[in-house]
Length: 321
Ligand code: ACO
Image 1: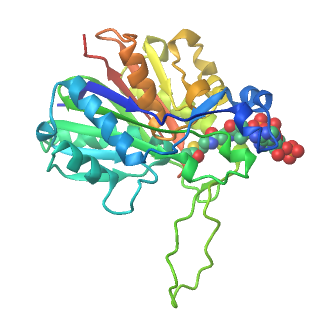
Image 2 (image 1 turned 135 degrees about the horizontal axis):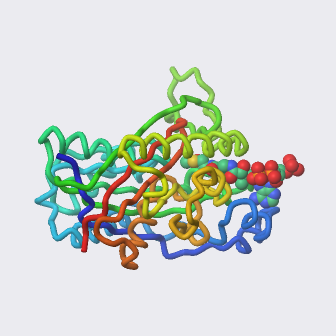
Image 3 (image 1 turned 180 degrees about the vertical axis):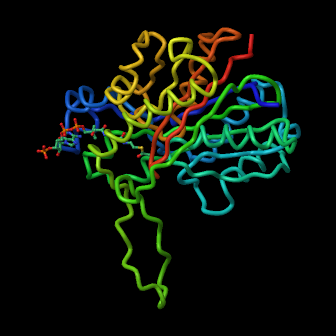
């Protein structure tokens, strides 16, 4: 037994920050950012809390799936940073939707949703769950140094959710890591006033070697697409829709080039949202599902890479009418 996607939802912060807005306080320009990345604007948290938006996404996905919190057997939240270390964001969502299901956060950076899909698949396959709520919530604006133009311009904040239920739908999945603790790194807070802490606090902001990430990403996305298609006994041309992680349009183009895929099959929202880490593919899924883009029986391929360095791909047949 595997799973199918029964419902989706998303909620983004109200505040939209354009590249021109960033150029007001950074030495950058719309031209530099857009030509290098494909990003025009992004949503940024101001008055909202991340957990409020995550709850809203979850409620929309539950309603879309026609289930309630009481039907949920497991809550997984893909995030690098909830509003609190504890309780986990998954527990906060569980409280709001009235669920007593086991709930935990999963950090696989930008690949978090794909990791959650594979964990959900294992719970469902082993008979431990029938309905799983997967939430994704990222507050990238609270992880970057807003004086570092090489990172802060790339990211946006957002939340999304999907409900997956026991049934036929998932065709194959591949997860992998290429462990590297330097290329993308965001240190944790070391605590306050400990007389025993011998470590100096590392700078509390994301560090990234953009060029190295770029090379890894193009390689990993291409390899994961090949592997997941092989496992599903499909060719890349037989995939109806590609939902790639939205880090950089050039990375997406370069990793898909060798498959000669029709560009109209590759879904994008990076221009309006930037890189929302794990949340990117979730918001993309919800946006195009709500537009009625997917037809029953079509094959969707999710592919992502991120800090870790993690990567993965999942193919799911769309089952909703
Ligand atoms: N505005 C203007 N100039 C800038 C900016 C900016 N926002 N940022 C950097 N620059 C400058 C640099 O200082 C550098 O100048 P220098 O050559 O004088 O030192 C120059 O631009 C770098 O330019 P390029 O090397 O041509 O930039 P590149 O084409 O490599 O693009 C980018 C950089 C966009 C970061 C690219 O490498 C990339 O997308 N990498 C992948 C990043 C990524 O995907 N991160 C997400 C990881 S997942 C996660 O973090 C959760």
